[in-house]
Length: 186
Figure 1 (cartoon, rainbow, N blue to C red):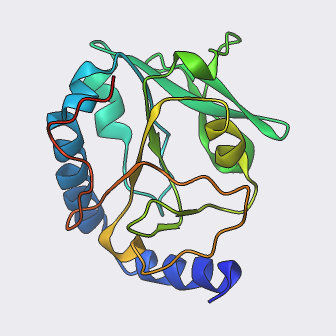
Figure 2: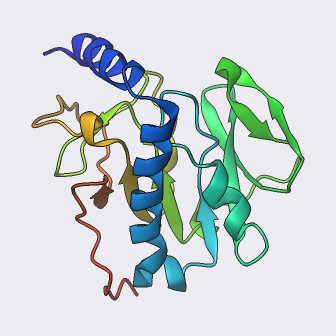
């Protein structure tokens, strides 16, 4: 399948999921991540404000906002600004994505862990995004541990990749977890 065909195929699969199924899968995924050494040792964590066709992140953002420095992306032209999340300080931004308010973008090198969204992933961490390249450009600027999160139906056998596409180091779905609970990433 081409990237365009794969996006359409996955969009249809996710649209068939109920809100309860989405929340259930998110609980499994984020419970695994939260139990990992990588998450426990990370202080500066970048998440994303999920859209309805992405694994829900709102609960994990709120749950950790006081104990860790949680950062969210904001579209700025062709790039992402990384802004510290503050409860109640989100607004609808580019592409109808909830984005953090504030002017102080953090250096990507300061992030310890990036929870990576995508339309689809394969088991090697290859990612199919929405086609604008925001995350590929961002990931090229950071040395953070990267963990892809998605629904089981978004994990496919093969993602077509191009030279600029950067894979996530780990992939976590309800049924597939390449992220070990004990891992020394220093």
